[in-house]
Length: 317
Image 1: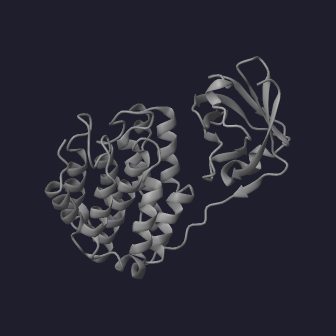
Image 2: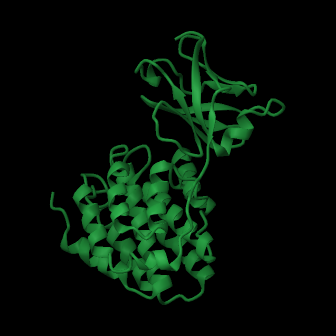
Image 3: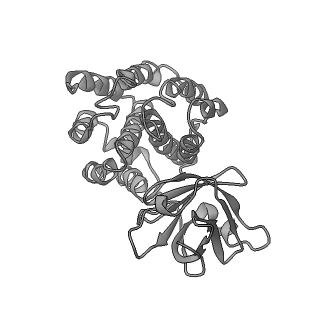
């Protein structure tokens, strides 16, 4: 594919200004290539994803490609990427270049709605029904139906969180303790983004957005996590920490903001089919964060109920 021109339909808010800045243009290199997506490590050490998929996010550039040709056919790992404010240029396998026009692109922004104690209260009696809905979506390899590399980890997580959720009153101390609990999952599981990392990404997104809304301490992402997993996976966890959410994640969080359990269950389906198990582990993390917050803000014991439900309904291989 020599000197091909593609059109960008949407640019995530995180990169919109940088991509269109002629005086300080974006640059980087390709660090991951898949059939319909390509990951770029920018010069300022951020993750930009070019994708043919329709799913929008603050870190993606959604392009229009008329054929279904895989990115693997013509993009080369390590290729240099540069922009000039009106286009992004990528070297390809044939020695030519892929030019992505930016003039017609629109900006995609986060559109998260505020979570309140009242909206949380609508979920206080829903831990078992919520996990029941998740279990119906379980597939081999996810944390709900683990492989040998993640066997028992979710139950340990739930037990550890339940044991401190109502015992540590100080929000800052609780958030710091949570980083030590979550790191037991970091880098755990097979795949490009391990199941444990997907869980952490979802957990941080839900927890930290609620923290912003309800004014309690957010959970930080320690730098040492980067040593436990891949660069790309760490950057996705970083996005979770900063509440940079794609449309499907936003729909999950917004259903909590609206106090709608039915909407939450409905939105689980689409996100759960993402990747091999990535989407399912992501929404499992978001769900565990939701009930962690409910336990702390409303004084319930949802996490113990979730752990008990998980053990009673363990999927036999």
